[in-house]
Image 1 (tube, rainbow, N blue to C red):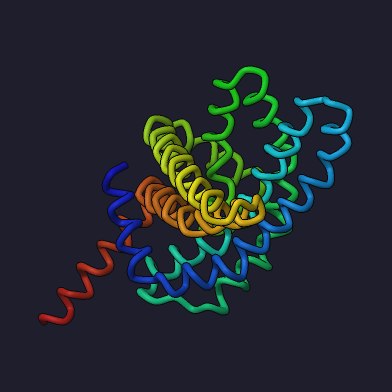
Image 2: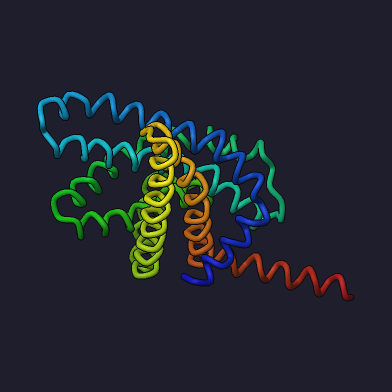
Length: 241
C-alpha cells in the first residue's frame, strides 16, 4: 500500500498540470452538478422531515459521480505508465468512450453499496471494495461487462486489506482537510457557499492521489507493471549492445 502511495505521489507531482486540468474541466463540474442534483432531489424529504432518504440519495449520486470522475484520472495513469507521456486529448477521448458504460454500471452497484452502508455498514464497505475496481478494469483493459465485474471482484478480494486501508486513509485525510478548510472559510467569510466550494476544491486535489494509488495497485495486481518493467529492462540492454 505504501509503495502504491509513493508511486502515486511521484505521478501526481510529475503531471500536476494535467491533474489540475482534469480537476477544473471534469471533477469540479461534476461535483457542482452533483451538489445541485442532490439538493433538488433531497429538498422534499427535508421538508417532510424524512432524514434517511436524503442520505441515501446523496450516497448513490456521490458514488455514481465518483465513478465518472475516475475515468480521465485512470487514463492519465495508464498513458504515463505505458508511454512515459500524457496526451490531453486522450484523457477526454477515454472519458467519452467509457462514461456511458460506467454510468450504467454504477447505478445498480451504487444502490447496492448504499443500502449496505446505510443498513449494515460492513456489507456496504465490502461491496464498495469489490466494485471500486470497475472503472479501472474498463479503462485499463476495455473488457466486457461480465469480465469487468469478475475482475473487479477478484481485485477487491485479493487486495481487500490494502484497499480498505487506502479507503480509510484517504477518507480520514479528506475529513480532516474538509473540516479544517471549511472552518477557515466560515470564520473568514461566514458563507456556506464558500464552504461548499472549499470542499469541492479539497476533493479536486485529493481524489487524483487516491485514484493513482488504486491504479498503481491494480497494474501490479494484473501483472502489467511487471511486463512494462521487463520491456524497459530489455530496451536498456539493447542500448548497451
